[in-house]
Each structure stands twice: as C-alpha cells, then as structure tokens.
Image (cartoon, rainbow, N blue to C red; front, side, top):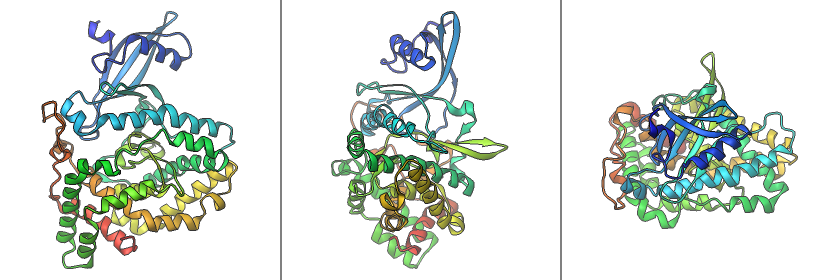
Amino acid sequence: MASENKTLTQLSVLLTNEELNNALTKWFREPTEFTHWEHVGEMGKGDSYLSDVYRIKIHGNSDGNSRHVQLIVKTIPKNICRRLTFRSHDFFINEINFYLNVLPVLLKFQSDKQLTEPYENYTNVFLALTDGIHDVICLEDVSLQNYGNPIRQEGIDYEHCQLTVKVLAKFHALSFAMRDQKPEEFAKMSNVLTEVYYDPKYWDWYEKFWKRLCSTAIDAVEREYPNTNYVDKIKEFAIPERYQDMIKAVQDKTNSVISHGDCWTVNFLYKYENKQPVDAKMIDFQLTRCASPVLDLSFAIYACTDLNLRAKHYDDLLKDYYEVLSKQISEMGSDPNKVYPWSTFMEEVKKYSYFGLAFSFESTPFIILAPEDAFKMDHVTGDDKRNIEEFWPVTPIKTKAGRLREANNIVHCVDKGFI
C-alpha cells in the first residue's frame, strides 16, 4: 500500500490520523483506528466554485474488524489567489457553524416532537475543521443510497420541484416552531451564522461582477423580447442599487428562519426509484442565513424551473410548500395561523420574489453552462486577491434557449407584478 494513502494530510493538514481516529470512533460508535484511504471517483466539473471537492473512502480497524465510510470531502482551495478572491474561509466557517452549531440544535428540538415526516433531508457530517487556511468538511456520500443530481443544464420537472419545496418547508418549519416555543434558544443559535453575500462591506468585492450579471440579463431580454415593457422593466431593475435591496431583504428578521441560502439545482440531491424522484437532500450550506423563507423559495423557483413549468404549476408549488410547512408546524405544537399565516406568506412572496430573480442572474449562466465550458478555477496564479469577475467572466448568453431561460424569469416577475 502506498504510504501516501495512510495519511489524508495532503488534502488538508487538519486531517491528522488522530482526528480521523476520533471521527471514525464517533461514526461507528466503537473504538476505531484509521488505517488508509482511497480515491473513488470524480466530481462534476463546474459544480463547485468555492471549494475543491473529492470523493474518497476511509478505512479503519475496530478490534480486528475492517470498517469503511465513503465521504465527500470539501477543502478550501489550495490556490491562494482563488481562496482570497472568493473569500473561501468566510463560506467555510459559515457552513461549519451550521453543521456543528445550528443543525444539531434544530434536530434536538425536533427529536422531542412526534412528526409524521421529520426533517432528515441532510447529509451527515463526518468531520469539519477550520483554521482559515486548511478548512475542510467531510460529509457522508449519499450517492451510495441512490441520491444524485439531476442534469444541471436541463432543469427539473414538477415532481422534482414538489420534492424541493417539500424539503424546504420541512427545514423552515423547524425554525418557525422553535422560534415560537424557545425564542431565546433560537436567537442564540441564529447568531452563530454570518451573512456572507449581501452586506455593505462586500459591495466592492461584488460590484463589477453584479454589473456583468445585469448586462447579461438585459441582453437576454432585449434579444428575446425586443421593444416590450419587459425591456423597460429589466433596465429599471438590473441596476447597482438593487444590491442594497438584497441587503435589506437578508436583514429583515420579521419572519426569519434558518434558510439554506443557495437553493439551485446542484445543491439538491434526489433519490430515485424506477427513475422517479422519491426523496431529496440539501447540501452546501455555505450561504445559510437567518431570513424570510421566501428568499429560499423564490430563488429555488427561478433557479430550477422554466416558463412552461411555472405557467402550469407556480401556484401549485406555493400551495405545496405552505401545505407541508403548516402541517409540520402544527405537528410540532405551534399554530401556523399565528406564526406564519397564509396571508403573510403570500405578502412576502409578493414582497421578496425579486430576491430570487436577482440571485438567479448569477445562477442561470452557470446552470446552462456545459461541463466542458466550466470556468477553470485555478488558471489565475499568485498570492494576491483579485476581482471575482476575473474568475467568472460572465458574458452575454450565446444560445437562444439559454437567453430564454434567463429572460423568462424576468417575464414571470413582471407579469406577476413582483418588479
């Protein structure tokens, strides 16, 4: 056996054998000693920008018995320029805080309840460590349980969307019930999370990139819906000042829940039986925040659906979401008509759907990106921080189908009176 397979420090110096021994012992609930590891597969190109991702298998020995666990390992980029440019540590520490200090509190609260369908739509964390330079998160590889991504470029159908909003509703319901029943504990838990995207201090970091995204959105509407009010509306909406509205949205704690923050296609894994989706799990909590649930829901809708699906099922998806949300809240002992009535939910849908649209300006160009066209994250060298637009050189969308995917999000928002 190659000696390099007896240590994982080449992925992160924090992954010492001692840490692995402790993690294996906790995982298998009996003393287990790390023996070796192996690389077992590649990750999708273009599906991860804030981290380097590996699929590996870790082996151990427990009283003479062989043990192993297959993991997805996310490490902070070794490329210093990339790490600094993307502020990777900010995102890693936020996700690590979620897995170590937020999710366990929510699950403990849930464990005292008698739920028909408890929230179990997450991947178990094996180990998470941070020092700002070698941050690492190791998660159970649920592909072994038949969970996987749909094809990013194709979008998802109504069945996938139903599962997506159901999972979001189950997740959000935990916050509504806990905030109602244990407000001080909820507030303390929420405070460990940090806003990593929409904050005045990040405008210099995001400004040039945001302006590129706006230009791409305007171009898509001008080319696919020329000489219409949609062109006027997108030019009014896609402006630098919109970033301030995004800041206000994430700062509104009136009906706030622990939200995922980044609900696009690649951050949901679906379980299939006979080629049909039957369950889903959420991954990548790097942008998790405490905010209105509509920020998650609106982004999921605009990032994951097309115009035809929304024309047929938009109202259904809102009802699907709220039906599950209210059921979960009720089963946990709170009154949904008091903590988050349907009327309040619909008011926030109207108030905050622009958020999902604006964030989709960023996701859509990447969703339609072919794997072979994925941006090369390590092509910029050096030890200095750059502007993120150098890594993400977003340009006008080349294909008609891609432009329509972008423009039709705007059309829907305009037709609904959201912008």
